[in-house]
Length: 376
Image (cartoon, rainbow, N blue to C red; front, top):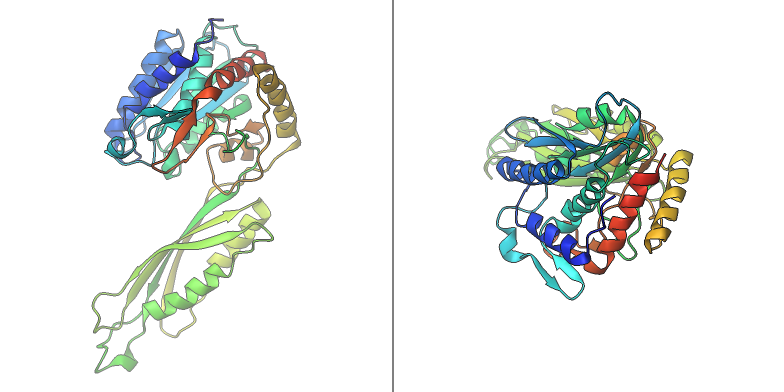
């Protein structure tokens, strides 16, 4: 295994990656980021493949230290190269170091995490350098739901003994994640009947009025004791002020802690009925990411990881269930022991104050080296 890079070398590498902006709606930027990662992996001697997921999405990147013909279940590392930050964010949050903080858009979530995992794997690129073969899959669309990459994630996960996810460590201690809520979305369209708001108001059927009833019904599905949240995120309707509105639509986000809660919320949403007469509801609801439920196998994997973290020089604590979803939800739902939040320590995900703690980088890289080399 190669010598672990110094903090200065790790920081320089991450800084170079942060100069490439790769927002989810900018496939050219994602493609450029994929090329940077692919070149890094290939230079280390890993087998690398880039495959297109369509012109609007960006490529899927796969790198491995598998020997030809080695089909054993191995370690699957999951990461994403897309960010939530639009092009130009570097002007508002330039790449810089202030004290112990390395700033830059997408650094904490999650380019620094990819860099740490890939640096560790690069030192273990020779087939047989790890007890299990290691596969790294970097997707281009996690921030928008992994719609194009999900089938590929599940295909690789089907031949994985463990899944390790490079999402950022939880703030205030660098905790990892073993449980996430499932995420879903409802698109609700209401069709009413237009009429002149002054002369024939009684003949109209207001889609906005009906939507108001539905919004209250949807928000009432929130149950904090069960860990269920339902949020009407966007709403739009009507055409002009002097016409009874015939159309209204909303998009609803919901989060659920387990499949029982998911099935309950899905059923209740599909059973929504109009309150007023002569209006129609068009309901389109799906569970985008199944819940990541902490299993006994994940608990055992966590114990191993905690031992490697201790050897690397830091305590690895388990965070409480988080409301945000990730690609870990998919592998966990398939029964693969999964640890998430193994990326960089820092804070400020999805904000202009996003940063990575420089002083933690060497320890985190050493942790990844031990994890990949010794898991069996």
